[in-house]
Image (tube, rainbow, N blue to C red):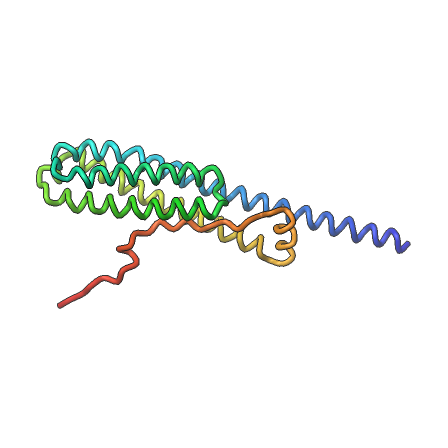
Length: 194
């Protein structure tokens, strides 16, 4: 009789362990799916940037360095995206992408600030269209990033909770990293003077 009780307990523990494992797999896949949505939007953004640079090039002949910085930052961010897309649960790849995105955002901000000095460029239909498409894409990236970060939080919480942490450690479920795409300007308090 005691033997069957022991067997029953072992079976229940095994079933419970399997359910924890399957839940962690499900949550990790949600993180990957969330990142794939970011991948689509960032790829769209990166594809728009060379067209934007071409539209601006004719007007901003003296700003060649800024245009080159935009392309360099775009290429670095695109490479970071490919590395992160290979394994969205790799914290180092996500941090690298976050840094590259922050750099790209800063350089694009400088490009748009310089464009303000060129009235013909500001009125150019192509430039206006690219600005509109980039703004729309930025909004989509923000929504996709929020969904990804929600999935990361749920996954990380599940893998850290007891007794899930035993299963997570046993099967090497590593913590996922939040994707932070912020510019330095957003972190700096605005200067107000009267």
